[in-house]
Amino acid sequence: MNLNDVLNDDTKRVAIIEDVCGLVDEEVAKQKGLSGVAVKAGYKLVQGVKPGFVRRVVESLLPEFAAALEPIRAQALAQGQAVGSYFANHQQEVSEVLLAVTDARATSSEHGSVKGAYGKLRGSARKNVESAVPGLGKIIEKYV
Image (cartoon, rainbow, N blue to C red):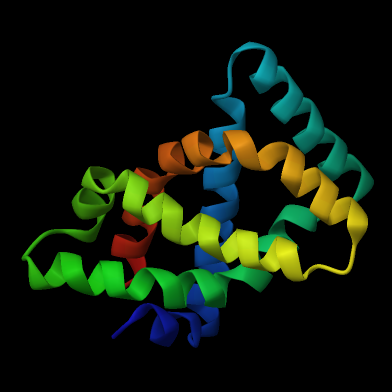
C-alpha cells in the first residue's frame, strides 16, 4: 500500500488531514522571536478571517504531497528503515520535495495576494518545514 492508496480510504484521509492540521498548529506554536510573532499573528489572522482555510489547503495539497513523498517513503522501506526515522534523518531532502509542491502551486495561482503572501513567507519556509518533517514522517508511518 502506498500513500495514494491510503488517501483513497475516506476514513484514513480524514484522520490524516486532522493529524497534519494538528502538526501545523504545533509548528506554529513553537515559533519564537520576532519572526515567530509574525507567523503566529498571520496564522491567527487567517484562521479568524477564513475559518477552515488551513484544512482546505491541506486537503488540496495532500494528493500532490503524497505523490512527491512516495519515492522517499519507498526508499526508506527499501533500506529497511522506519519512515519516521528516515524522514527525521533526511529533513532537508523531504522539505525540499514539499516546498517544490508549494512553490509550483503558488506560481500557478491566479491570486496575486496568494503569490505575494507566499513570496514573503518563502524565505523562512525551509527552516519551518524542516522542523515539521519528523512529525510528518510519524504521521505517514501511522497510516501506511
